[in-house]
Amino acid sequence: MSVINVAVSGAAGRMGETVCRAVEGAEDMELVGRADPELGVALDDVLGDADVVVDFTVPDSALRNARHCLEAGVHCVMGTTGADFSELEGVGEANLFAAPNFAIGAVLLMEAAKLIAPHMPECEIVELHHDRKLDKPSGTALRTAELVREAGGNVHQPIHSVRLPGLVAHQETVFGGPGQTLSLRHDSLARESFMPGVLLAVRRVAELDHSPTVGLEKLL
Image 1 (cartoon, rainbow, N blue to C red):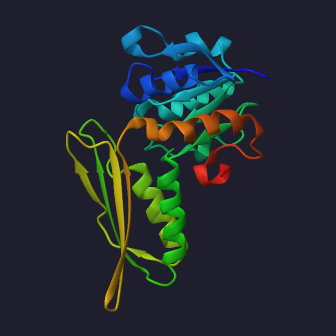
Image 2: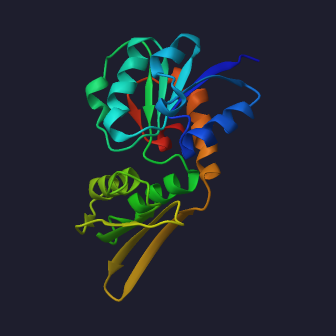
C-alpha cells in the first residue's frame, strides 16, 4: 500500500490538531510535518517531505500558502475559507483542492438545496459558528447561496451570521412558498465530523483533472 506523506499547516489550531490526529490514525498516511507560527515552524520548512499539505490557517494567508505549495510541486488540500483560488489556475505542477466544508452532511445539504431551489426559489440562510471564526458569512453559506442562485433560487440578503462560544459549525437553509416552508439544517457537533472529507481529499487530490477544484461534492 502506497503511503501519502502529509504535512499540516495551521497545526496548532483546533482544526489543525484534529487533522493531525486523523492523519496519524490513517493506515495509508504518514504525518511528516506540523507548520504553525505558534510552533515556530514555517510552511516552507515542511514542504520538502510532503506529498500533500492540508491547510487550516486564516483567510489572509490562504492564497499565499496555496501558491507556495503548488510552486514547490506539493499538492494542497485547502480548508481555509474566505479566499478566491481561481487566480491559482495553472500555477505549478501540483493540484489544489479547496472546500468550504468537509462535512459530508453539509455537502449533502448543499446538493439538496440545488434540487429545491427551482421549485421553491425564495430562500434564507442562517449560519452559526464558534466565536473564533474569522470570516463572516461562512464559506459554506456563501457556497450554498451560489449554488441556490445557479439553480434559479433567490437568496435573501443579508445571510445571517451568528458567532457564539459553544457552537462548532451549523447552518439552516430555509425555503418558502405559498402556504409552506422547507428547512434544511446541518450541525457539526465536533470537528471530527470534517475528517472523513479531509482524508478523502488527501487521497484524491493527486488525481484531479483540474486545479483548483472547489467543492467536496466533486469527489463524492
